[in-house]
Length: 489
Image 1 (cartoon, helix red, strand yellow):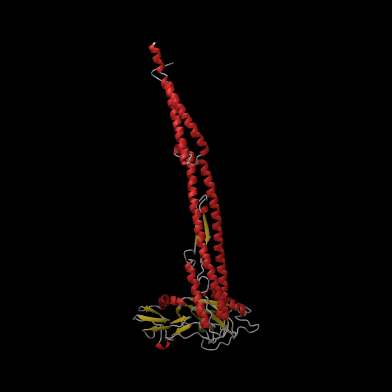
Image 2: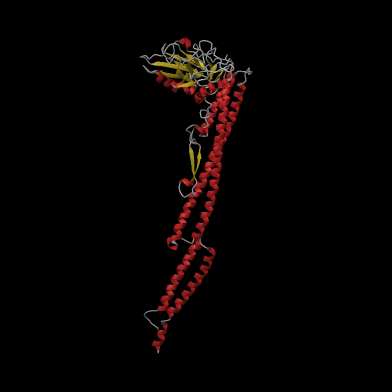
């Protein structure tokens, strides 16, 4: 039917032309953007999946950077550990040299270098943040991503705790030295100790007797080492073992001196008192001693409180340390206040063996002065420190240092192993993350990227269809003109 009012063919042509225009526009959008999905309406479900993949790729890309940063930090720590290992080797050399009884040089000179290297260990441990409580002395967590949850997306390297700290204190080196001798009852006491512990077949503390040794340490700390006998008595090795079980963690070692008498050695400040209730190990007249490897200022007058403020002046080399003790300061508080000021300089205050006064000890020379006679210090004549005893002729301090260094080397090796394992672990995590990035990128490409070859063909198709639709629309619009011919006749 020919109609003037409604040109159906024209409407059909217009509709198809609009569809062809939309098809061509979509094809051009894909070709120019490179994406199959340019708006949500193109593929809403596909876009949601692609967005999730894009997010995972972004997370993993930063995770790779995190892993690389983690490896770099661990490599810095690893280099520091190697350097500390070199220092430990030098400490071992110095201690071994001092441990020989035929050494005729100056052990004080050896100890000066030894002490400076022990300090250097702590400095370098601090620089790599692996000192006790340091930034890296914890469980390190590196977020790499790619896991089903946060925990599974992180890689942990556990460097926490004292066992992973490599400063001198954590390695057990801060209380060691390579000076002569130690503390031997009878040598540092008031009379000769005639009890030899190295007699062949000798047994001690029979009938389950016991003997206690009380050690006063810096800062008012006190520790008691008990030796427990058996019904038949104990041997020398068992006796020494019981003492060292308690004392080793305090940097003090029990052993025998050159004449077979009981001796305690160590670089820390300490004095010792034997309870003498059953004086099997030491004679009843030699029950107290000081650490004679240290310079010592020891008073004979009891510490007493006073209504006045007492000012102490401690001279250590070129450093002057001032401590003010307020009126009626208790002995324990005085020790705490003094050590807070002096311990950074290696000078320690401790309770004397009588439990009534204060004495000072240090591995380096120093002097102490007080503005109140009869208080912390008894008199000006005892201000200067007494030098370490050098006539004991033993090498126990050096022997103890060697043992401590061996333990430190073993500890350091374990830390190096954990750091190396952490480097490898992060390397493996990095490889997996890069693999996941490739996989997720390929999956996203399948969903979002345009098929250029197909869209190029579609563009040609859309152009032909558009041209055809325009031509057909022209023909459809011309159809009503046929009515004019009918009207003309």
